[in-house]
Length: 252
Image (cartoon, rainbow, N blue to C red; front, side):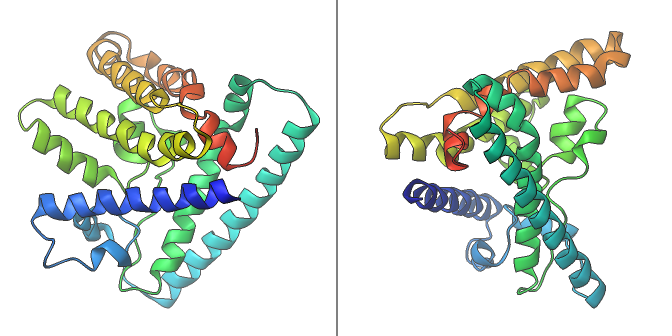
């Protein structure tokens, strides 16, 4: 339990660092300092996507929170039983546990939206049904984790204002960097075991896969874009679901 508390503490600090950087880049630190604390979103510009508070919205948000809480609890209980009953390697656990990451992030989003009812805005859902994506660009750019999309767009444009390919690179670079800070760093500090680099490898591979999709498949083999997307995301998943994540969930 000590590791989970330490993990959550550094995770929260990382989110504050991301939000703080967005305010600096937007030049809105003095005007919008309260944004650091009153919204689960990363970039204040995402407020244009917010929904008005109403009884209907509150009801929907609370129902989603209840639904995702039940789903994540049921699946977590299943994984605990499954991994204790049968022997699996780290790689096998990573593939088997990949579905739960989607369910858990939905639960996190539902929790954040429920807590946001205490403030003046209710953010959109974190994910926009990523399983309907037709290619890897749509998956990462439009449907997965919309809460950080504006932040990644902002910071990548600052790094590469004229090159789309470089903006894509910087978006994945900062995704990998902050995942290292959020997941690998707490594990390395707490357990004194260096696992740094796995997250960076995963997101660098996503960058290469996206370039291949945009430059080759889109032009010559568009029918293969969707199956390639699932291959690109799932095949390197052990780099993402590694010791830090499995340890956090108590599955090692």
